[in-house]
Structure formats: structure tokens, C-alpha cells
Image 1 (cartoon, rainbow, N blue to C red):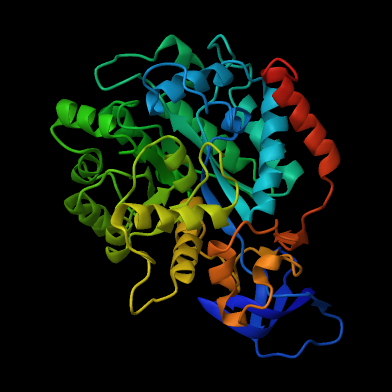
Image 2 (image 1 turned 90 degrees about the vertical axis):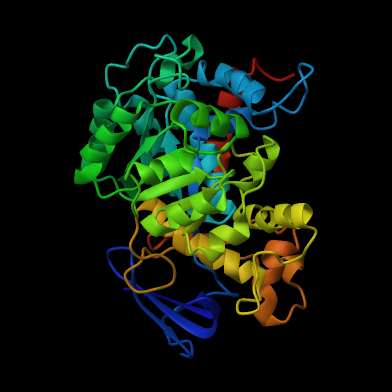
Length: 452
């Protein structure tokens, strides 16, 4: 049994003093004790520590596109024009390039404080749209990348069968995404049954516009033999809401609730444009929401009704989606800053009963992220995977602060340095980025035609 000791640690929603952490042979916390002086033989950590967070929404291949859509190519630029440009990368990337780019990304996510990532995996086939000899080829590339980087991975193969509510099939530039419910379930079963270390699996539906109702119901029934979560993009764009209303007579989240699909396994990604009645309907099912503030800002999606989601008690996770941001501190900061800009108020996520904005958002993301990744236990608690973050003790962001307000400054006084050390499943992640970075850089240059 490995023993760590920290002068302070985030335990049960607050800073605890003199924390002793025992790691079992299974890579989980065997015991967490507070108020214990450092014993002989313990590894003494040089500063306060935090649990790692789950990045609950990722498209790893889009890391190859980050920063390349920031020029206007026409009179109008929005999510849909961005999507058309993103498809060019999706049609070009090879399994080897995907692994290299994903490994680069996953190491960045670790430095940004994530120790688990939920991969919303809809890139499935060869560039011409034909299946690989092994249909799971690109999924294995992601799993290999996660193992190389040292991060935990939740693989979510995606149901994607049509281009829109009124479209019977996909567009040609969506040909690599084609799946049906049975294929998605078969992929998820393969990923789960492989029992790779720190890899689990669930399923996903791309969106209501991309899958027929019968297919969504079938996938939900097939997924009954899986332990993992079920994710879906929903209500990210107002055009999507309008199309859903025209096609079904109901708003997207209301449709999901009315169809009896939702339960505690479901995660509604973005959920940007929800009205109070929908939020209350989601809350009644136990489903969660996954908000991706930096991507939603980058794409001009809009701002969710965060106070309503929190007041309704809906589990809330965060994700970095297209990876224009790769640090949870920035996601949590923008989660509240967007609300401040819209409402012209401060500390919108806080309440008189929970006055610390950073603490409320962090704890929500901690608990909601666990559900989004399919974990019953998460954080610095016995039985959870032994993941831990050590902030850089020399980071000027924390210099001279009252100890009890370290989390406030960590979120709202940036930019902070990368975390100094990261523990995943009881092992410190190796600091050997050179070869990984070189392969990732070479893959990015090949995808974009070399240096310019």
C-alpha cells in the first residue's frame, strides 16, 4: 500500500488539514483520513492537493482543428459554417494521426487538471466511408492514445445515421460517421469487454436530428447490458430547436423526456437552449447536463440558464468538446463569466447558502463528471480511483492567499500554471512529453500541409 500525505486537501467539499491518503493495490483510495500528522514512510506532498476532474465531452480529432477557424470566410459565420470546415479534418485524419493527436491532447488535458475523458466517438470509417477491416480501429487508436498519455478514458461510440430531421441519409462529407444502433452497441461491447486498464464504455446518440426515433429507442434497449452512460448532443443551437419543433412539435429536451428515454444514465451535452419546463422535466428523470463553456463561446452557441439547472438539482459536468480550451479552470471561469455578462451580475452560480462560486462549480463538476463517466465514486473518498492533482507550489496565482481561498483564486485568478504533478489510478503520470509532442506535431503538420 502506497501512502501520501498532504498539508491540505479538498475533501467532502472543503479544505481539510493534514490529510493521509492510502492507495490500495487496485489503484483506488483505500482510506482517506484528515487531521493526521505525517507518518514515517509517507510521501509528503509539498502543497495542497485537489481531486482530478472528468472531462465529460471530447472530440479528440477536433484538437487538430483548434485555432484554425478564427477567420471569416464569408458574409456569415456561425456554428454551421464552422462545422463544414471541421469536416475537412474529419475526412483526412488517419488512425495513426488520430492516435498521435489524441495522445498530445490527452497529455494537455492532464496538465489542465482532467484525469478522465469521455470521448464522444463518431469518427468510425475510412476516408471513403468504407468500414475498416476492424470496425473498432479508430476506437482502439483513442484507447492507445489514452494509455500512452496516462489518462482514463470513457469511450462512447455514436449513433449517427442521417443529416437532419427531414433527411433520410447522411451528407457525403459525413460518410465516416455512419452507424446504426446495432453497430454502436457492438462497438461499446467490444470496448467494455476488452477490460483495458482505466478504460470503460457507454454509448451516445449524436443528436435528435442525426438519428431516427426508432433507432434511439433501440439503442437504449440494447445498452441495458452495459454499465456505462448514454450521451447525446441536445439543444446546442437555436436552429436545432426550431427544426425539432417543426418536425416533432416539441423542443428537444421535452421530446426526450416525453418519450420516456431519460434516466440517470443519460447526459445531455450542451443543453444550451432549454426553457424552465424542460429543465424541470430533465430534473425529474435524474439525467445530467454537460456544459462546454469555451467551445460554446467559440462557436457562438449561446448561454445556458445555469442558475435554473443548479436550482433544479440536475447533475452538471463540464467538457472541452472541440478543445479550444483544455483546462478545467478556464471552463469553470467561463461558466460563471458568461452568466455575468448576460445578467450583469457577479457570482451567479453562488447562493447565500453556498457563497463560494468556485467551490460550488467545482463540486458540481466533480459529482456530475463522475456520473457522466459512469463512476459510482469519485474524488478523495475511499473506493474511488486514486486520482489527485498537485498545483504548482510556486504558482504566483496562489502567492500570499488565505489558505481557505485557494480554490477561488485557482478558478478566477488566471492564468494558472499547469498542475505540477498528476496521479491517475495510484500512479504519477510520467513527465516525458518530448516524443509524444513530436509525434503529435508531425501529425498536425501533415494534416495541414506542413509548416507555413
